[in-house]
Length: 389
Image (cartoon, rainbow, N blue to C red; front, side):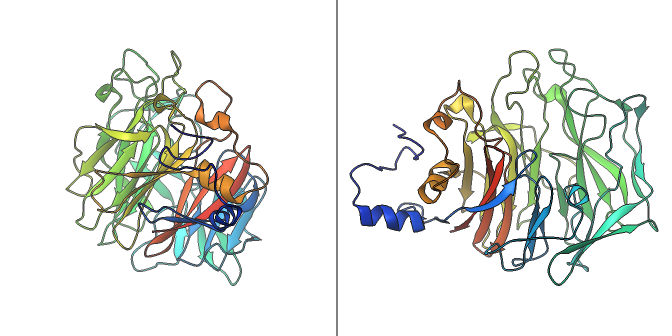
């Protein structure tokens, strides 16, 4: 039985004081061998900590409520960046293979359009992000427009997309430099819940400026019992070239009964042209999945709010095989409380009928071949912990 914030297999009673102190410094799981450092406080966040910018293992940052906080030493220390945080919080395109240290966003291509229906989305400018001496530098680029075209049907503003949503979407860069970018749209298909969303994917051959529609990843009609439809998701390119996507189906925002469900997964073996049928994943869910492929081949998955499994805290799951079949579970609230004397999770995080203490909107940022930072929020404040496998 789960006690406090521990995983079910963890015992916290009758420990000697010295052992408690050691666990607070670095908590190592005796079975799976993962270690979590003390949590680092970042600051107030607007909604979770699901956005991050990373140029390499050392240089990374997180947009908070009023600033972009930046590290040039792999997350050991953070300082405020001079960059514009609202721009930096937008979805950033994957870097081109030949230009590792240059990114750009999509300008206003994903801005809300309250009226009308559209099959093309564009922006006359974007922001380029480059790595400066102490921070990330954002510079407006008006020489190349952003264009998403070829959607096979027009879409309009709805409850979960208005009408072309990058928030909660994903991107990947193939070995030849091709950029794949997903978007969340609403075009019907679920009579049970007309606002249920679908996921589509685009392909760019010019470093992420012009995108052509490629395929439908997951349709609202694929899961007719879902109230939200396939929506927030993340994607990694596995070593064998397979695209692996984890998808939120229902995370408590459904308009009828507010259900919570496990994540679903889908695979593509042909660079995003076709996708396998959505399949339910065991033991993981349910809001805003984030994914990371480490250099050692392990797949990292984070998220949480898994009320249908009995709790609503943030989680990290690890698949060391790199196949996405079996994930080890780590309870972020437990490891957070081991090292934090302020803003601790209470026991209600393990319950399903209490107010949320966290959004479970997390971020994953690699800091080495077998290590990463997990970003998460507690009562509207952001934290990170360094995790080593």
